[in-house]
Image (cartoon, one colour):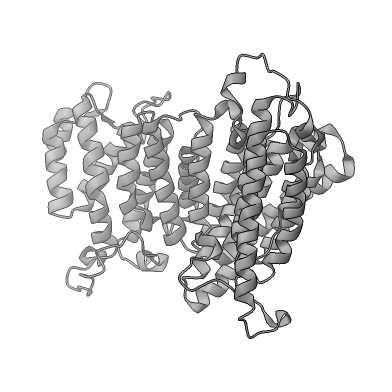
Length: 528
């Protein structure tokens, strides 16, 4: 090896990496299990990862020069796909004992399951740990550098997939694990690229974050929960209707990732969810006390609404999982259930903060979140008062004005806006039609949620009364049809509830279940 290296050394003191040189190192490292050839491969990998750096000084890590793109690809492929086997061999397998005469029974431990935690002492007890520690650190530092400098999505995806075999070896290096997590989080939440190819990079970066949350010693998972949520909140600032085709799909994906991450350890998740929901409550309290436009803007913005949506999804997922988990895990999942009440209070406070017509879309967003919480937790969280107030607005009874703007024919998309235009607010037919349709959609969903409650007939009395009043005063045929359809639905379910509750043996005060009238063949609220 030394002869080949001397022959390949150029005038600048670098060693030219050739296929013959790599063949000898590959045989020595992966066939003969030599540590010196393995360290040379990692040194070449280090040079490959830093070859595009602006600082090209001739230090220890720049000893090797890679001229050809094929050689570069081979170095990356060979290192990322094979070195993890040698790490396992020298730290956990037969090669972990420096004395050849004494062989430990480590044949089965050389195989590392990438999704099972590996105790750091198990690696540090190896006789080879002193020799391999520097090589491991060099490998991870080089990989972090190439991930930060890399631009090609296909190249980044390959590296992130290959790193799944190396994550367990981070357990004895907590500082390196933190740096690695920071890099993965920046890739996962990268704001510049929203292309389809880069979504694969985001997915694989999250898979590595999730793997680290599972395999790294406690409390590393808390760092994962904190950094991912803060990255989501930072990115949520740009999740506006203007960025519906670029940012919003990415935010939806990131939100689903955080829901998955917060489902791994409910005890840690509860502590972080409590802190961040409390932060939302403090912003709301500040807006209620100051009553200034700046304070209102801190709450009535897309960042705040996206965070409410995220915590609604996290708590709803914990409710769903608690039904299918074992007793101990179910008790941990129920920790998050205690946050249903404070989150509901925050959402209702947001609805009542600025009850103007212009912010009607934002209130409808909040109604959806409350209904999702009610369905997942199977608790009574009424929203009918908010919806019925909408159909009693004075703008509903006024004659619509014609909107002459260019976008009038397209209508409005309520899911991607939080406020109506300042000019002719809720006065054009397009705005009225979108809002009234959404209100009756949510009202029908509310009726369906509580149709199996013993108190459903009394619950619908006020709904039917106010809808009849609306249908009588409304001149729009379609809106009257919406109201009459909802009234018929209420009356039909109310009569069915009266018949079913007459057969109950319990007294009304003894009934604890919300859906006491639900047949066994009918799915629960959360599944409907």
